[in-house]
Image (cartoon, rainbow, N blue to C red; front, side, top):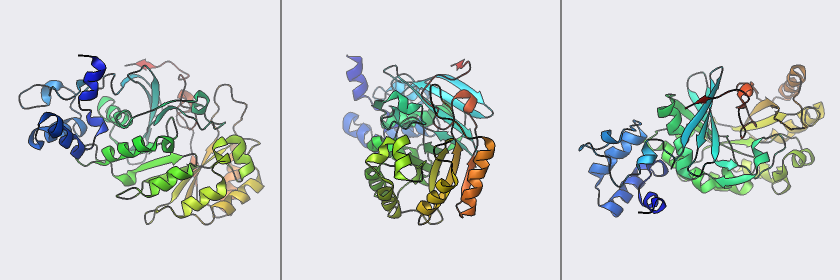
Length: 357
């Protein structure tokens, strides 16, 4: 049998919720929920990768793609990892030979995984290394979910937060991102509550409006803003030309935030571009009607860029101007910078030797 056809017919649990998996197993293969439900749970919740451990007869189900369960090349195989002070970046090689990068970030009470949603990105933001790749292709839902599986069951990290802030623009691949969210939140599988997932966007207004209408409620939303006005934003973020700041704010004002939640606004501070006192004042005026937590990020240098990071003193000065304007500002550290795992640095080879898996 042709391998590609065979894989298309076999079930990939990473791409399906529990109910979708059970229903498809019955419709295609006549397998009842009594049989298929435990198989799904063993893979998605328990991380069982041994084919002999999946069914009561000691056999790997012939209708289940074994390469999906053991991290093989259909869903992607972790080929490299690098570490920096608790931050772990790992590289997944996909079935077609393309690589994506994911980052595990230690937090106070739980680990956060930054997942990729595309290979490359079409947004072209000047401060982002991934944007220099252009868009190569979208990831499917299974390839997104497999990054969480790899972190939990391959690298042994109990990931409980997922942020769609890796390679790619999530709202440019919204159908697959939404399906991945549904798979990740399934309590019979990965069991990551929606309130612990955040989707980041460069400001695609149509996508924000679609995300707002999700059944069972929207996810947390982060917006990569990075400028106080349209002139600067269009210069460093071409997406702004078709999604201007006024229209973006209008979409955010109608977005159904949960009680006690807020938008995460990302502001990459770039020397000589968006770091003056008038920029801080204009940014505060723009944010005033919104419930926001502003993540202030010093620009992380990338090879070949003509942009420059602010000095520590300039960073603190800009932060103090925002605080004076009563903006809630969170310092974003530089964890992962030495391994090219910091904000805007994904999409190239790490700057130090990797551990081959």
